[in-house]
Image (cartoon, rainbow, N blue to C red; front, side, top):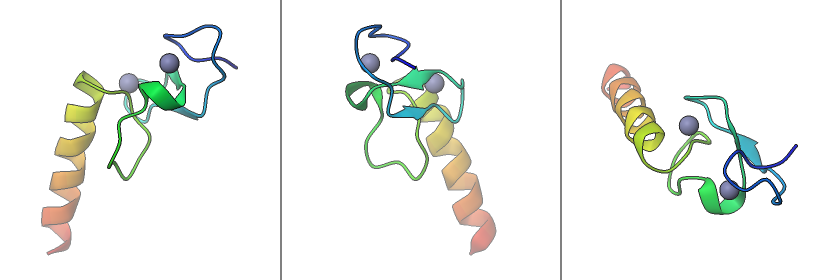
Length: 56
Ligand SMILES: [Zn+2]
Ligand SMILES: [Zn+2]
């Protein structure tokens, strides 16, 4: 399986938001779950924030 954006790069994970295959350079950093940079990162951050608040 290769990256959704880079068809010549091997995928290192699947985005938890849109389920696309991602290479290392396409993955968002500092996230608890694997996700794309940009829109999916924003969505995943919102979900993490909701979970974090629910745990406090
Ligand atoms: Zn995504
Ligand atoms: Zn990529």
